[in-house]
Length: 478
Ligand code: GLU
Image: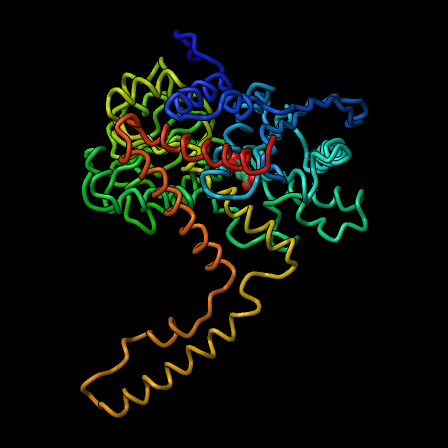
């Protein structure tokens, strides 16, 4: 066990300090700063469930950070370490994250103190339904007020139970499906939600690499092709990010850090193989894809181009920050770098692509799912065939030209099939996500490069997010 040497602020204090650092550079009206910073309300519930012949009591939270826009949005986490401080920090991050990527929501977060692996599926269903009941009866699950989503320890399965529980309690609500996002595709979900956060990390990095000036600050050149990457945490987010970066962009995943150790392969790990191994064996140890290192945390100090912490908060802290060698860190998790470590890295010139931007792909696609549920129609259903018919007109003309010109000119192979195919829901979701990640990066970047007093992307991200929250408070009054 690693014993922390430095005493650091709590996660919520860390987020507040980052907030304070940003607002000190803004000119907000007196009092508004404080109004935005504080968490509006946190509801704690303790409920009993009869299981295995006895009653077990569970503690859960739903925190609402800011209601400048409603519904408020944010995941529900299942972990033994869940506590009020953590849920409030995560809810605050949701507020700034949604504002930054222009998802029209306030910030919220929920959590249940539970080890999901300690329970059978039917028991988890009972617990989840009971938790959902407690939240829904207080409008803390509601399509127009509070819309949860998956987070650590939860996924499509839990979201389907929550949606069903809400429907049982609100039998005439025509928009009931929009009460939660991250549902399975066959139960009101949307294509591409499971991969969304990892996909967003990939799009964020691609956008970063489009800007030579930004790459230069991190001492990098070229594209993602051949870049060495270390991923900490191969859960849903880390797995998808690593998979897409290696399989589609040519990046090399040289190490993975997991709870039971690390795995190294300088030629690049087969991410699918590692992930499958973890699912089957509950850990990384023994996986033949690379060399196993028992002291996984030591791999934080390995040399690489890009470090991706993709699990929990506080993993890069004052105890290990000095050994970090990556020049570029992208925070796929929420809060993986403590305030103290952030300051050290900032002084050192390490570029950090911050959580509230880097992992916003999840809530962005959740936004698409919520809109789909409210509109009661799948994206692309109206226009897909019409788009194809119009493309067919052009292809017919080109084919006529092709015949006329004989050997002098011909259509590029596969042009016809590629051009003819109207976009399906998954393509539309990816296109919307890509656009969101590019636009949000550019808005952060403008502040980062446009102001001498903003030395880093995190401060820039907070400034963009907070100023949007402030203008929506200004527009509607408090
Ligand atoms: N739990 C995810 C997050 O931290 C997703 C939230 C959502 O989709 O509402 O951003």
